[in-house]
Amino acid sequence: MRLLTVGLIIKRGELLTEIEPCCQELARHVVAEKQNGEDWPGMLDWLTQTRPHLLLVDVEHLQNAMEERVRQIKAVVPESMIIAVHHSADSKMILAGLRAGLDEYFYPPLVSSLRRVLEQKIDQHTKNQFLTDSDRRTIAFLSAKGGCGGTTVACHVAVELGKRMHDSGTHHVLLADLDLTGGNVRFLMRSKTAGSILDAIETTQGLDVAAWNRIVSNGHPGLEVISTPAEALPRMLEQRELERVLNFARSRYQWTVLDLGCCLTPYNLSILEGLNELYLVASPDVLALFQVKQIFHELQEHNVPLDRVRLILNRNVDYEDKLVAREAQKMLGITAYFSLPNDYSGLTEAYANGNLLPKHSPLGHQISALASKISGIESSTQDQQRQAPWYRKFRVARG
Image (cartoon, rainbow, N blue to C red; front, side, top):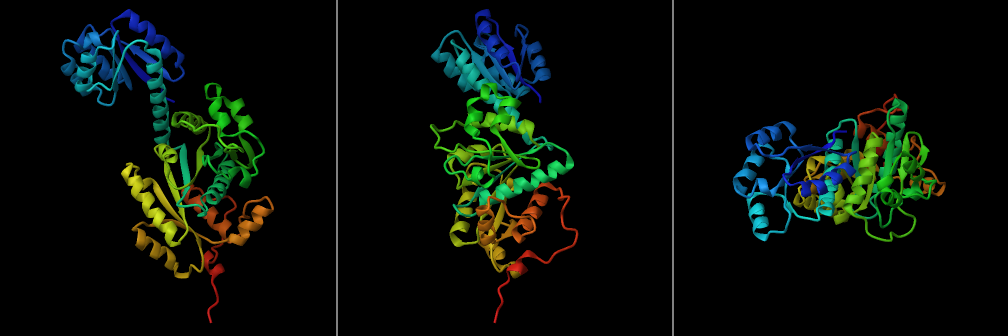
């Protein structure tokens, strides 16, 4: 994992004595590079070589030519976050700096403000590395509305992915319940531990493998599960807290599968940025399809790349000729990524017995095929013989 690079161009020792300890406290994630800034052209060459993610500049290096020097810095490191530091809150200097293009302006006490920004940048830096790592995938399932089966699909797909990872001997899969108001993963997966995502958040500062293993539950090959608390949350979770736990999970698992519950909310919208794919699960009724259209519109408004969003049509009956999917796609202008049959009685019986669906059931067979499509890995127990399309099993006889 590449560390976050912080460039320090600090002239005054009293400022440096506040900044350096803060960087040292986060030394597991941050590497600090220093330059005195006395030779400005040489400093620009140094920036070109180090390309820091975050740059702290003493205002004394800027105040005589604020706009020009900030422009020069941005020209050589356009992606760096630039923070000016000064010994006091000089309103004229702050205004001039922000107009010149500074991202932030800090003055003593520096520690709290600097640590807050560093932690945010570390979380973002870590997440971006996982998103570009082809060996680490984070996917999520979201129901268009309550009752569309997003949690059911997430649980079964996670089990199938776990089998594939177990068979190939690679990293395990994590199934995380992030439906904080009514998550059902604990019940469906028969989680054996009382630990929850809240316990992981509250031990973030000391979260390690031993603490993590006390929180997660396992009962399926290659799969570990972290659930929501069994009781109501005592407080709302902050995005930064949750992001740190997810980054820890991404470092341990090849696949992280998230159940986001139903409907878009400010809470789960904040999670979408860190996903490789979002699987939107909808039944083929008018209300669910209307919600799908609303969700796609809202995703566009929040600049979520729609090429990461996949539509799964669930609970289709008498699907011969795929008429329902065609009509749904015509209504939405969206191509369905996958379609699943309605097996309400089979699911009810399996859940009553404390089990998930057997793989040989029509729905279980299709979910296995869905997991293969998502992962690009066939199950080692995949049926070798081509079977009749699943929808023929549900065909209603016509007179």
